Length: 127
Image (cartoon, rainbow, N blue to C red; front, side, top):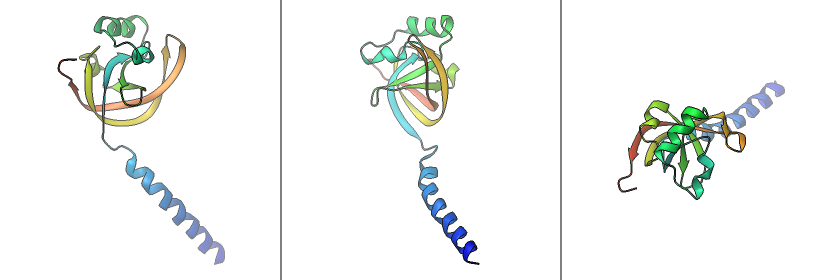
């Protein structure tokens, strides 16, 4: 009986710690940045992307469309890819969720990044 009580207490403690983690998982975030690509995306700290360069990297270097987030200076793989393609090289505000991780190739070698699944992508006028 004592073992059962200890096991139940341990399970309750574990559940209490997992609830805050689950509450944050899948929460909607808003990010602002450039729609770039995974091949050149890390260069965006000092240089904004162009539409032509982004499209070329996706086509020729098997890159994926990505978001260079201004706030944390990170590159997120942007899904859905066909929607991201419409905003190549533009500054956008993206609402969606971060989840999962994916490998990709950069001009400096292999890397990985978080996947941002967008529910909306809005271009920033005048940028």
